[in-house]
Length: 470
Ligand SMILES: Cc1ncc(COP(=O)(O)O)c(C=O)c1O
Image 1 (cartoon, rainbow, N blue to C red):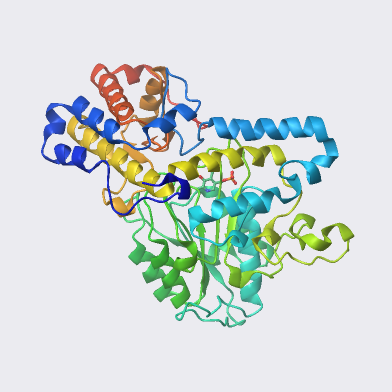
Image 2: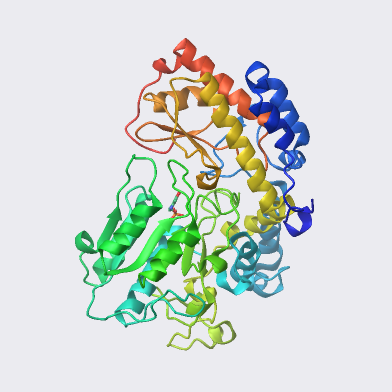
């Protein structure tokens, strides 16, 4: 095992012996012992001490907002001190200088998504990044340029300018993504009612990738396929390479919302042929509330003019010549817009360092063991609760969707009993046992508390709200 380069040593699975005990049925007779064995075998167990999670809380909401690591707080403190000590000179004299913060942090994220350093940058938020990227690629299509054929034999490099491009999405997407795509279509005089093509779910929880392929076969006007890497509600994980291949075969660009997987699941965007992607840093990357967004643009698209151009995306060498015409940086950095918010970016430096030490492959292995353990516990002990997350490990992200008709009341009752989860309408309680700071014993304690609440009916005392953040 070598955490320093973020890689595992081969196929060794430290949780396998305990999982075998689990498969033999020892789990049902003595789950406490199985959890203890899993924790004892866990190479990441020491990492929990580096995160500020109160001792009296079971924090299962890292898929919404990750907790601060010591390193993230230290890198934020350092930026504050540099502001105090250096004032304006921090842009050039901070260690390292703030001027290159967005490119530097982007490069530090690149290994997590399987990209070259110049293909990733931080800036803005997911929604803003989606506006500029979808706008950019819609403009490319309208100029007659489809995805480049280089390296992707099936991709069609030409777009028929007589065809008004459509964007293919799915009905379980995060709503903000649809708002942004609709707006970008409208701004180009394209009716979203006609050209936002929405793949439907068969079961209300998941999207069958075959239905994406069928939609591409059925319509020849799709210019961008935009899908999540993982669905925000059920946590279904997609095969990014399969979707990108289908998009390219249909002559469409492949873009992804990777908010619910970066930092929990390793990605290989370059190998998969992804054209662009957006994600946040406040969930599994643990960089803090409202922390800076991140984006990936494949190298073959560098040099394009972003739809939302701004001076921070200008070619760096000449940015301060203050020319009135915009020369895009020859990297993903071009999709920045304005000055990077240093305090919304600074914690990411420490946060990523902690994840790098843990190693993304080890994080994924432990995450799957934790969600296996949670799903098996729910199956064995909570008959009124349905698991809405795919059981297939390859189709499972970092959290588990527990469905219960009184899901909102249940999540409130859990919160009052020290278990932090969140509720997503109509009936989903999302439980995220994030690998860097969650023990198997914690998962068991969560199931114990759900069982106690449901058995006693304690959740019935709670009222149902009319929306708002949970
Ligand atoms: C999957 C997904 N996409 C998009 C967003 C919107 O992100 P932002 O508020 O950073 O624009 C979120 C926010 O949680 C999300 O979970």
